[in-house]
Length: 521
Ligand SMILES: *[C@@H]1O[C@H](CO)[C@@H](O)[C@H](O)[C@H]1NC(C)=O
Image 1 (cartoon, rainbow, N blue to C red):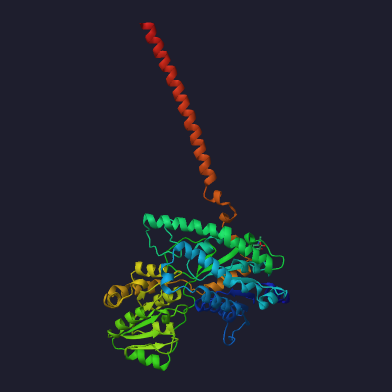
Image 2 (cartoon, helix red, strand yellow):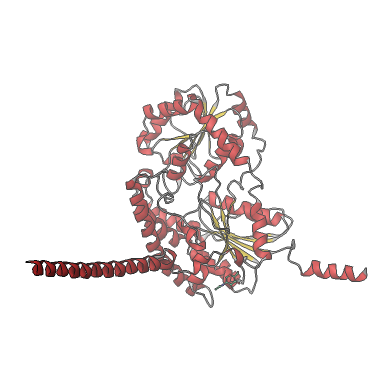
């Protein structure tokens, strides 16, 4: 009996199963939506009893009270860089909307990489790098920041990548996930499936061009950073293709269904919280709106106040003629010409508002978190997408029948009125979003299965058994180009041999016949 107890004690103390791990999360991308996703995940890990260190550009106001420890490291330099870039080259909404796909790819890759650089040279990070601390796992948000991934190797930990959007060329290449350009539109496009010939043409060119841009510009740049800021910096290729797990903020209820290799896991919707009580004034406003409420928000990065006056006036004239009440996230103190049925607020508890049964329509920029939340609560949308993945999200909502897209450049009083009426009066939008919501909620495990998978990677020392062999093949072998060339060559040789032998045989027969004819005459 004593022996069993001792064996069990030894097992409990040595086993990593269920024990507390040291976890480093790096979510430096500027923007509240990125931060919400990272901090929600890391707080859940701390709540589970793990010791968590969160590197970000924003940080918590008060340290969260969790079972394990939660340490914030805030790199304030990132937001300063954002301000610098905005001062130099802040594109207007209309510039963004019309930006060429190729330029947008290069612009994002180049600018974001500049903004993210402080994440390695900031004093707090350098102190951490030289601190001899060890971690059991490092989780990095995939957002144009490949150099940071080298910190996993530096701290002797497996690397987990989290994508804040659906599967895309940034993460597919890391784990060898197949994503044929023939039916999977690139993230920055607004193509729907099936794509037309010209869409497939552009999609194909864009996917090859993006690959080349990363290989010949972004990765060498990031490699340079690794060598500069991380002692004994490894080579970026050892970092990129050794990812243990990719957590995808995605789900078939929200995105096109696509193939995944075994170490890609969908956790889309994990950030959504059960509805909380609304502030009194909002509760009353929503309860009393007998004709329903339209909720209007362009998200946390875009500001409604950036609308130029003519667009804003068109919107105001439209809203003032509606019988519905409107709740508008407006970031300034006054709105000139504010109609009676419009209530303004600089900040609104979006999830709790969407949960209210009187909300009939959500006018949105089509950001991915907003899309998830609206599907969760079953509210149809009118999308005014501007940049990034917004156009594709909006297009997907349209294809799934729960939203209408109104391009920013086409906003006029007539078009806006007509589109709002269409979504409000045609029951198909509400029915479709309810169906999507059912698919969203019908799951075997909650999206917080992320915690299980992170612990799984720790338990199995990086889970190399999930890694697909595609990653060890050079590209020409992956696409079977060597095999195809071989087959073409063999066919050519067989073709030539057949041709010349047949010709030789024919000549012989002809000569014989000629000979016979000569004899007869
Ligand atoms: C790849 O990751 C595994 C698991 O984290 C680690 O043991 C291995 O050393 C890594 N390989 C390289 C080349 O860094």
